[in-house]
Length: 286
Length: 290
Image (cartoon, rainbow over all chains, first blue to last red):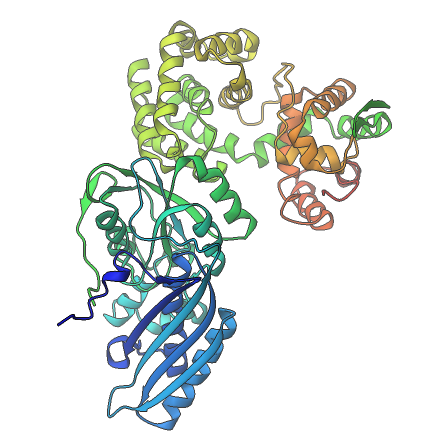
């Protein structure tokens, strides 16, 4: 009997189908809703997370669909508000919302659909020796969440604006434009930055020499570099670009006001190295 | 007016702009380099740690690879200053070269074309070793004989197209030799390096008439000629004119004329005479950069 292994989309953050890129992400509230989030925030972030895979694959976000398991009507209403807010932020329409009753743990699945430019999309495989590694968008907000969860930082010491970044990180929506034009490979940071880089390393069969981590400067007093390496759910992007297209790529970033940083290079080999030291692959696995 | 296709030099504007730059004065421009050019500050900090001789060699060599950087210029010079300060004063020339090579390897700003940058340093260190040892022994020769140094380095690099970075390396080593508060100009005549910022001021000041600053950037010959004229009339060497324009033109691309002018005014007015600043800015920000 054929099982439902996703062979068709191996090495993809989002799956291409004709002119579209499609992704689905699901979350159980007990495992994903941070204590300081409302259900509206939680749904908003779930939509962002699903769309992040579409953007990093080179798709322009155009539509969302979702299915929610709610424990009561208040949760249902909050979730629909969150999805509405996300649809405005992502400039995507909501195609369909499906509602279900959940006994004790609300859950949500979000489908995100993006449109490809000339059917061009980018996978995790494709990076080559000599390519440059670009980080798009700041990271570090996941590490802040981690420290708040572990009570290493008191939530009352955190500015509201900074706390909001754990709900809406530095997602660069227009990044699909330079990515679709010039990237050789890409992956988004949902399970941890190192894990994201390993996605590219393992799929492309290359070694990644990471030289810098671009953390949001407002996090400097809370997070150190090593912590930022494993920062998760920042929905920033790792992208590789061939040297011959590097100037155009950076020019496009500048033009569209997208935060792009050159943070490393690609070499023969396997694994991720930070300042010449091999870094262990760890992050959320599912 | 000298006609050259769609681009022209506007002599009337050149006279007015030169006059207001002359009125602002060379001493004020030298002071402005000290107060507002972060490169000067970072080089001085390095000098405090490793001494003038090594700071001059470091500044000269690193300028030659200060192109296509993966970070902002300010961040690059900070990285340079902090990294080499931490190494302390080298025992000899070879140790200095070794420190510099490690800096290029370790500072992420040099990531684009790093192996080419390393080769470039190697070429100059091998090809101009006697000259570099002479500078190490007597850094003042950078100010006394800048043309001799530029020719020697150009020969080692064996390429005309690097002229801009070679000129820049003279300026940065001059920043190392100059002490804070010392008003000693660098009297060399160089073609003005026409980057985006200077193209924009060439347009906004009205000294070059063109459809847009982008055209000036693409065909810089007329702008070079125009700034040569301004340099002569105002009696200010191009290398110092470049500092003035670079510092006040930094906001022109990102903001509109009014905002850029306000921002420049805010910076300058805390150091210099209000009337001179206003006259200068009125003439350099004469029309919108487009």
